[in-house]
Image 1 (cartoon, rainbow, N blue to C red):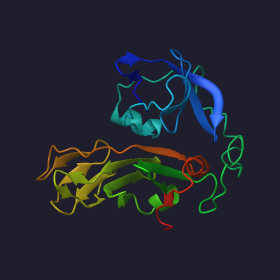
Image 2 (image 1 turned 120 degrees about the vertical axis):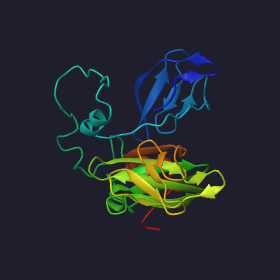
Image 3 (image 1 turned 180 degrees about the horizontal axis):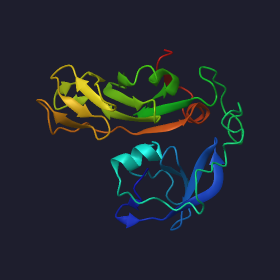
Image 4 (image 1 turned 60 degrees about the vertical axis):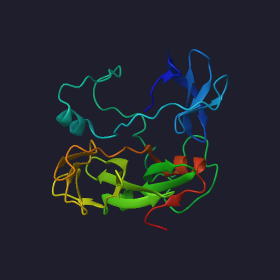
Length: 232
């Protein structure tokens, strides 16, 4: 998710119908520039090189979301029910999207879901198959300490910085879903909001790091030098 405001001006976006390495390309209606969904950056046109501001968001099941936010407003899709146009064969097929792979990389199954993280020029993929068994990962990317939080039931995950003030924290899973406990102070944190809810650091907030949930073939084609957590 990205903000639509650039240098004080609000832009409107649409779907171009184009793909770059199997990833959606948007366009803005003001300048007709093309934007990469994965990069959040204009790749062609008047605004080329301009980056959109990343906004933290979650990909989770409707059941989980509406439990957390019962008064939420939902987008009307134009039809009722849970119809998925890709359900018939697409997810089980080993094909790499619509236009095939740009780079071959067999470290993971082509349609393995990963949480992809960029910090500077460094990229790391956290496979769902690893996160299923290790739902809280303390890691360091390009000298930046991060923690990956994952819920296997809802396939939801997020990434936060582990630095609070001048202290680097180490997290483990608490007894409740999405609950974290840091071993340095014993503070309990809400993994959904990144907020410390009880303990010495109550009220502190972890900084959300940009991440995306994506098929392996989409991530590695944009980041051929990516590391893969759990394999390396």
